[in-house]
Image (cartoon, rainbow, N blue to C red; front, side, top):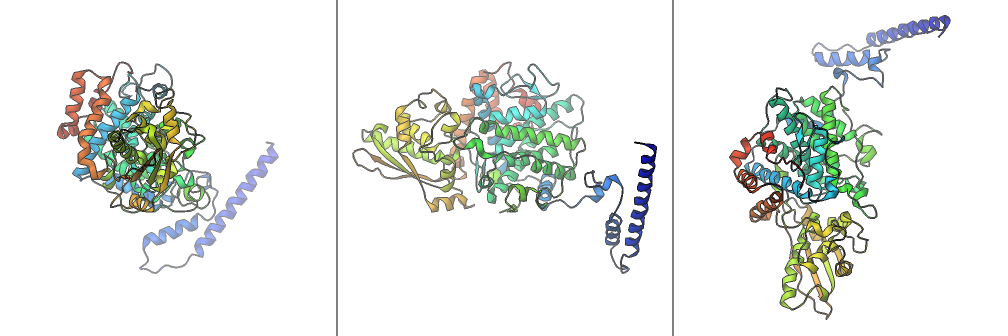
Length: 556
């Protein structure tokens, strides 16, 4: 810039400053007189607003970072979450006991997934051979990673087979997905603090603290899902995993309530996953690692806020640019109940089959009908057609009667395939979804699949949404080639529903035992099962010591 140009620039700058000062002074002199009784806070607030009417200060320009004092109040929805995370004390014995079973079941599901190369190929460090000192240990593997990548690894494992817990409402989801973020951070924090670090409170965390974090993550994800359908606007439910994980992890990292609000706002502004990968013709394996991705993003965002990044106070409600206007068709979130312990107390376990939850009762009904068929000297070959009286969510998500079954992801999200496999083989296992498997290549399974029709029963749909019932009813009617119609078999609540929780507990532990046995020696398996059955001892155990019990020298 020439000397003359710089001179003109300086003159213009002084002129603008002079005019700005005059405008501010004029606006202040024109301010109304407050009564003596007027709150000093109101007078101060008004003066502050007037003094910001025009300024050359870069700190108050639209693209600059505002000071905390100038920040607007946060959206109430975010305030409520942060308040719950920091101030609510978990007291429910039922919730804690349920969380214990969820922890064991979820870890077992993750270990089972390690038997599948499509899962294990995604695990490990970004750069092969990297080991992070005091990092997160990934169960069933030799990996020790940073907490961000650790969250992805654990999150992907536990969701891979669609066999962990489930929550069904206006939105669907699997709240134990949040364990990917919770366990990764808890393990890293504990190892680092044991080595002399000072993350969060500086202490080594216990399993009980992990369970309490799980209860709160379940509650945030589940309560938001009760009345708010993300799938109806094309968004995947893992947005709720990201939000819930962000909220609970922030507390574990020692953030203040204000920082938790900032972190939650970052989770909402982050790009949200579409459901494309869950629906034909694009169904694919990303649905199996989407929750891991959400856990990874949650931890990453928390660490950024911990380093000083702020938040966006109206990330939900801002006109045009907020979440509601951009992604939720202008509709605000609705809530059925305040945050507490309701979701963990009522969560659904997948006990019997590694199958999308809306199909569980249909598969159980098919198994019961197989008994009747055998008594009649009949089999799946004699079935002409099957009618499945069901609820709306089942039809929307997994009714794929005539859709092609191109891969694992298609099969484990097709109610007809799952029911047909049960009729033909009297079983449904994770291996039945694999390309080239006996079930996947069975002509009878494919033929029968296309003769199973779903029809909605409005009462089943109403019961599904009723908070006092929350049933997931399917009812199968089988017609045979000879014209015989078997009596309809109705199953309202699957094993693992709260109505059948006590019946399910031994089955949950058997499932856990089956999943961990291939990975460890007999002594370690016994140690893990005994520990899982001893709440007092388990709750008191330090997280890193517990995770050490799942470490291996190599993947199975």
